[in-house]
Image 1 (cartoon, rainbow, N blue to C red):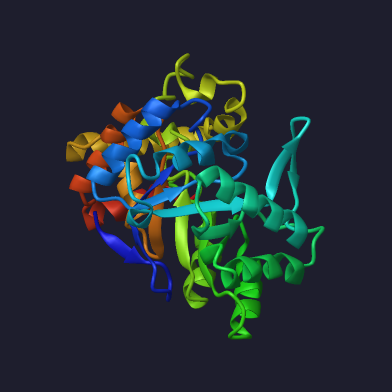
Image 2 (cartoon, rainbow, N blue to C red):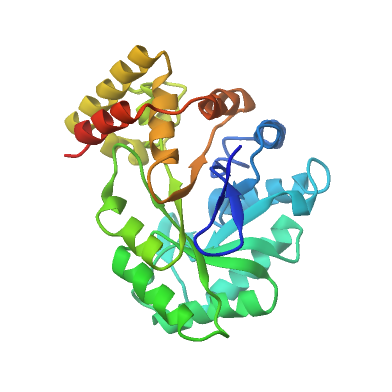
Length: 315
């Protein structure tokens, strides 16, 4: 698998990253190990998680694979902090105290004394940015994080955070920013991709398949065995079942048929090779599903087809 440098750092990531949001909840330890094995066999080196995934269970599962399925120095593990749930309500707390405490819990669950990339999961309006960034500095200077980044920041927020970190050589430089990007959601093209490139920050695309909608599985409704049918996930699928999304999904299906590919391969290849993308994060519930996704590594979209998809999904 092709490796790409994250911004202007020395860190290289596989152009596909393994997302683990379902690990420990919809994906058990056996399936997680099978997924990880398939991903590593395909040449991938980048595994992404977060403290909030499965209430920490995703990190625990990954920690259980270290030493048994792979050596710690063979993979790049990224995790995130700053989002939690209390009584079912999503809460953002990117204060220094909360972030550092969560980092230490993440390291314990991962069974490691460091994480390769530690990212702030979301912008916190209630916390001064300098307080949030001081947590990144602490993690970086103490060796708890080899690289640091941010997630779900807007363009101006990226620029502000990156500029502050670049103002002093003693501060931790931002290496990555992670935001949603797919044919159904191209908002990052307005300012986020440009901001990341200008600031020397690598861009990680999450939900490149629009939570599975671009695979075409929801063209005739919500399958009973899909994540869209799960109570905790349905609300994430619904925004992409509107008329605009349906039109784009149909265009992807037509393109795939003409090229002899699957809709999944077409949609994922479009994001993976989009200008400015360092790595696209893929997720699956089973090893078999992941192997089906990894077939995308065998294809590259023709330039003319990329242009057609750009036009179809522009509005």
